[in-house]
Length: 363
Image (cartoon, rainbow, N blue to C red; front, side, top):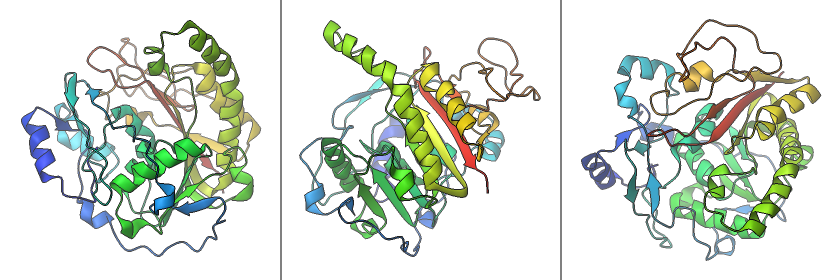
């Protein structure tokens, strides 16, 4: 993901020469960095701080501080341009992908110097696209560390303010350093780092935000591939059993924090149905003011050449609709993906797993 707040011409040329291509149709990034008045919402000084002052910065490396594998399927350019332009969210978000696994070096953190790009799993951008942030909106990233999705939000638009919440001190320092590495000092008043417990955030700031992202703590299936310790695996299994309760609490809190008419996007990086569809369904049953929105046509259809989406989850309150996409399993989709959509890693489409669900709070 390229950084629109610094010069990236040389990086674009390098990426293109190595066979990378853009994930999304591009708009002029400069038109999105506009002068929006700072929000008047009061901020508790013991819980929140501007993102860039020195006391918020630690020596913890950002999560792109090492060489990462980058892989994908055929680029989006294989779709007819008219089709992709009509369906994909218009964005200044600049993300480059490659059709094969390749290594790309990270950039070292240098105080006062902005990094040009951030390495991440391309599927991690989908929750941000689903959030549809617009200039001047008040946005909350409830579980923000290490900061990749917060950076993506700032690449998409210039919100009135973005609150990046992270209760863990070590991860919060990591988050602050990540933001400092990519955002200019002129955005200091717009980006806030908060230390609240996400489960109670909605009570303290009820109805404050236009958009809320809940990238919830989850099983993180990819990390299991690198865990060889039997003792560690046993501990993680115990933690995994407790996660759905925490995830539901965070989602309920987010629905309280968002204003009537605003939207919440819930996401995880696990294949676990109990942490994905079941959490959303449980919260919807408890919150009559919450209405799920179908992301299939908006996200899955135009990006089906880049990502593999799982077959429809036949869950609660799903209704038939017109066939829209030939699934990877040969059957036409016949049900709304009302509870969410799931990216599943496949050969040459190794992005994910990534689950995302968008819920609107009724007015």
